[in-house]
Image 1: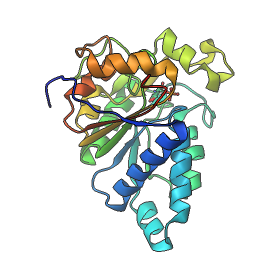
Image 2 (image 1 turned 45 degrees about the vertical axis):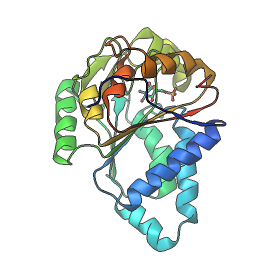
Image 3 (image 1 turned 60 degrees about the vertical axis):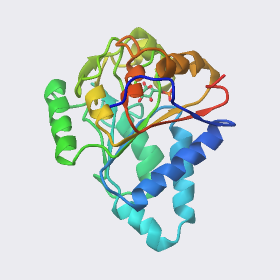
Length: 251
Ligand code: GLP
């Protein structure tokens, strides 16, 4: 942990594509020397990152590409509770579509909490135990919600909140409605998410933010005193936080 400060220096790149390339390079470097599992996120910010990663993997010599595929081990932050099996809006389906298939990963390499579990609270505990047994996260990739959430840690949220089942805010359901035909009411009301506890325990955290609509929340998260009202602000306490943003997000 480090004290909250204003010394975070974001890497600022031209736009989402440049950001995606930079983050994909980091992920690939991590998987070429796998230590602990990767922590992954979903969302519009991450779609170009995974596409860039797939392109980079295709350009690698076959021996190195095999190292990445065979050593792949990742834990996603979150998934919705209660979607039907195979629902394309689930984060499990998103990861299959954006990452597992394009990278050619074997089944089981990309872990997510099971939003279809009969008992979501028990599933959250099981997922936390699985991650702990894996040694915790090495590099944690994070997007930023418009209300300052990371994963689905909605405000208010303390720095020690564990993996758990949460209620989603109306703002988050509106933010994510596009994947549900544009209807916020169709977005599930609950999700299972890793907590700030697991996120802050990662060896390295990479926060990725693109687009002007996130500029104000990013500024507050990085440079205002950490508070439960802005869960991402707890990242200021992480001693190995990198922020990769585009110009619009840093405006
Ligand atoms: C979602 C996810 C987060 C994601 C964030 C930003 O609700 N739970 O993991 O990083 O909100 O999403 P987007 O990249 O679509 O703006």
